Length: 399
Ligand SMILES: Cc1ncc(COP(=O)(O)O)c(C=O)c1O
Image (cartoon, rainbow, N blue to C red; front, top):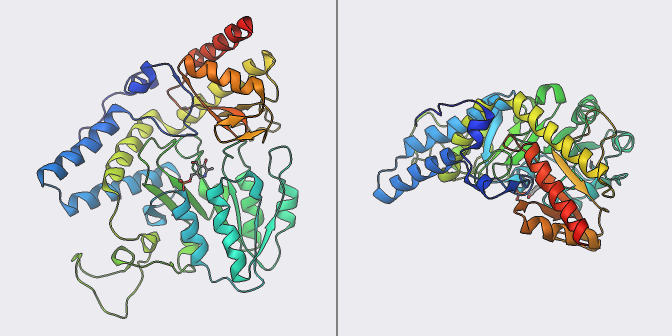
């Protein structure tokens, strides 16, 4: 594939057709496609259409995307399995542990996306106690979470950034407490992956599940599951097929010894054929993110979000998500009462009315848990904030 020969954020921005329509402040919902990512997928589709695909080439792309993701999060490729999405990764980890009756897991269910809730609820059927720690003002209660860990705790879980109200979790604080008790710390990372920086060693994250369908700027149905090397041999995957087995040949249709060995690394969690279109997209998108530079992406996305947050609060919008600590602010900005409404609707009249005006003005955003929700990436700028404020002013003027 030809290298992407440009570097500045401005030039990268020009490759997103969606941005010609207005402001895209909805990466927390789904990615927009960059022309280079689309071209990569089209290359695959052309080969599929012409019957010229090759399995070897597919594996090259899968492994390239794996290596790029590993580099992004300071991991080794052997610690990254290809998965389908967050749910796939979370369920794979949960079902791989040898839970014993009376073990427990700690989580704050009311802050999690449903896809990081049901896998845990199901564990109760296996005699596992779920220690559900209520959130406080839309935030994790760190004291209570770490205080709930004991000698029978096997896993601790949270989202790196909640889907609403959008605060960033202090992973290191939880990770340190988990590590001290040999508890597996499993993170739903889809809101931060590709936008906020991660260093799983420093954060003491043991497992991290993400899809590429948001900040990683790829497709649905392709994701990454990070598993720290120290855990790999302690986990027995629930599903098995050819990619998970260590064989000394490259023959994809040969079964080796019936006395099989699992892959020595995270590939033991891979099941069946890959979503190859997703691999082409992820490889191209990760190349773009690499060009943009992880530090620049994070700094930029956080700065634009901070300005939007400040301006909305200054304009008198109620309950704008304001960080209380240095690590709490994310690239998500929410406004309005939490849980007065749900997915795509609000019981707060001004949220509904302003959301309708924003949509009319081509400001792509969402309503989640009843709140107005925006999120930034490297392609956003203060011009997007100005557009939101213009809509707010004209809506107020007309009201
Ligand atoms: C925090 C969080 N977790 C998980 C998901 C989705 O999970 P999956 O990738 O399994 O569809 C979303 C959003 O769609 C999310 O915001």
